[in-house]
Image: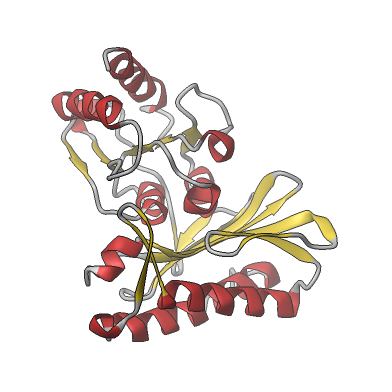
Length: 268
């Protein structure tokens, strides 16, 4: 692994990759997985909970006092109240269950209410994205930069579609219509963490979604910002983790893209 990894990132990467190896094995036996229904179109698998357990155990070895915010396990308080891990052991569970090789492990460290470090790892492609505040964002050994496009009509955007049981279908349809009409295209790949990593890498020019949880976006927020991008909620505030709303773009597109979505939502 690259010598850019700090001791903190080394711990996080090792935990994500160990969980990823377990997910990769389970993905190869997808037909045999026991699946429990957690909610409408929202599933949790044995693989999901096993990966989370692996990450928690690995991180606790090195930072036993830190707390956790876990998708499956909830909040685990630590004696160090300044630091907490925010973890999604399997972002893209529906993809995983359907045998689609596009999902990721996401691990972030929040220190005093600010994201300090983030790791996003796709175990199928072995794509590793990581960032530490103030030190840039990387894909494997390569520095990440957001795209340089400045016009929406030239830009490619990604999003997440509200599924069964989620609110906001009408609003989303209006937003999608607006972005489709104004841009070079829209993609929906089903894993918000990887969408944000792709924005950081300049593959997508922007990403928007509502109804996310902190573990879906914590690591990705830092990646985009450390790659030179802009991340806000729909009102332009730094409150994505509280609101569950996120818009990620480069600085040139930020204002116009946010206004495009705002105008669309008014008509919903």
